[in-house]
Every structure is written in C-alpha cells, then in structure tokens.
Image (cartoon, rainbow, N blue to C red; front, side):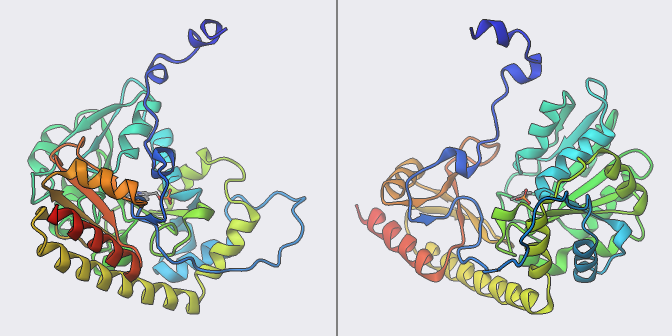
Length: 357
Ligand SMILES: *Cc1c(COP(=O)(O)O)cnc(C)c1O
C-alpha cells in the first residue's frame, strides 16, 4: 500500500523533516515558554454572522489599518496567513527550483531554509559570528552568485540580538540590483526603534516581514504582513492564493489595530520587557547558568550547565522550554519565552531548586 504512493513523492520531499514547531513537539504543560507567544490573551468579539461569501483577497480595511500603524502606503503592504506565508510566497515568486539560491544566516529561524528545501531551491548558509551574532558581510558578498533572497531575522530568533542598522544598510548596498533583502521583524515591537521600515523609500529591494502573532498576542488567528515597494507587492499578489485571509481573521486583525488596542499592545510590550529584564537578573545569580545572551525580544537564550537535565526536569513539572542545543553555535542552550510575571517567577523558583541538587 505504502509503496504505491511513496515513489510518487518528489525526491526533495521524501526525506524532508517538517518544521519542529512548539505545537508539534508537544508537551504537557501549564507554563508554556517555548513558542514566544504572549502569555496573556487579547480579547475580541466579532459581529460577523454570515460566511457564505468569499472574503476579499486583500481586505481593504485591514490594509488601511496596518498602513496607518506602520506609516506606509496601502500599495506597500500585503496581508498574509502569518508571516510564514510571506517567507513562502517570496521563494515562490523569485526563486527558480534547482537554479536559484537563498542565503540565511544561522543560528536563525528555520522556516527560511525549510521553505527553500520544499521548493528545491539551494540554501547558502552564511553563519553569523559566534556570540556577537553579527552578520558576515564579506562572506555574504562572496556568495551572492545565484542568490535571489537573503533572509535576516531582526531581532534574531533564537539569539535575541539586533542586527546593526549599518550592517543592514551595507547589505542593502552590496545587493542592490542583484538580490532581495528580507528583514523578518516578527519581534520588532519589542525593540521598535530598530525597525527598517524607514529605509523602504531608499531601497527598492528591501522587504520586511511582520506578524500579529507575537507582540499583538494573536498567534491563533494567523495574520502577518509583507512590507515592500509597490513593484514587489504587485508580484506577490500574483502568487498568493485567492482567499488567504478568512473573514473573521480580518475582522479581529482590524480591531487589534485600533488606537486603543495598539496602546494595550504597547503596554504589554513594556511589561514583557520588564519581565525579561527581571528574569535575566535572577538568572545571573544562578550557578547553573553559563551565559545569558542579550535579548531585544520576548525570549532569552541561555547556556546552562546540565542543560538537558534542566530541560527535562522542567518539562516534567509542566514548564516547557525550547531546546536549541542542536543548532549551530548553540550547544547547551535553551530558549525561554517571556511569560507573565507569575510564570517567570515559577520558572526561576524551579531553576533555583535544581541548582541546589
Ligand atoms: C514566529 C515567527 C514567525 C511566524 O510568524 P507567524 O505570523 O505566526 O507565521 C516568523 N518569523 C519569526 C522569526 C518568528 O519567530
């Protein structure tokens, strides 16, 4: 039975390992610190009652709301099913299978490489420098042959660092006319002064990815945005599916972009940043901690003595972290999402107990 199907599968898909999302990894927890979600839900209601009609492909009012929030024109914005769909659409629109390449800079978000693999597009990994996590501009410049897209995550997941603005500008300069630079700003609200949005007017090949999943606390509705100049947005509009944004998703997303909801989001960001700083200070006093990486987002990467035991013991207690040990340059590292203050305190309490064993 199985053999009659398997030989039909594309060879690059046959042995593909799917993205190991927090939901796929599972766990049995009551303190979820593994998916960089916001710990507190934002509550919305919908008055929409009928669903017999297809939604607009690009809901106008949602685009208008985001354009106000981000300070761009409507024609510079594409709404997508999460930022993840933006990553995928860019490869679909710009990369020829088995011919073109993307660059990504590990350790970073895995979805850039995974989408390239699915599309049979070559992946050139140009690692960032260990511990400073600066991008290796010279190495990128030497490897631009065949490259259509360069994915940079800022702040970077899972390391938490900011990529220097001058490095991104230099990257834009060396790629002008030959490749597109994609800055994934999924966490930018936690460090908003580092956004590259203001550079869109100077660089036709700059693309920025955004999401409502993190600071806006709406991971469940699957809504993201691709920001770029009109020429790029027009091309992406050719390849996006006809109805990617459910009626109800657009309704809630619009509410989340009201003046009042944005103020609530900003307050939540301030609170989570305070929780992060508190958590880091507590961790500094714990002997099991080897190194804490500076973070500008709602998570922190920590290198531990006995990381495996810590991960396992906390897992058993229902405190679920994200193991990063398998990733380039991240041996013995765990990523901890910033939860509510109660959740952060519970985590510290358990770590303290473990450090006394
Ligand atoms: C969470 C995350 C995304 C995905 O966002 P969605 O809008 O939920 O698809 C994209 N990039 C990075 C770096 C992320 O951490």
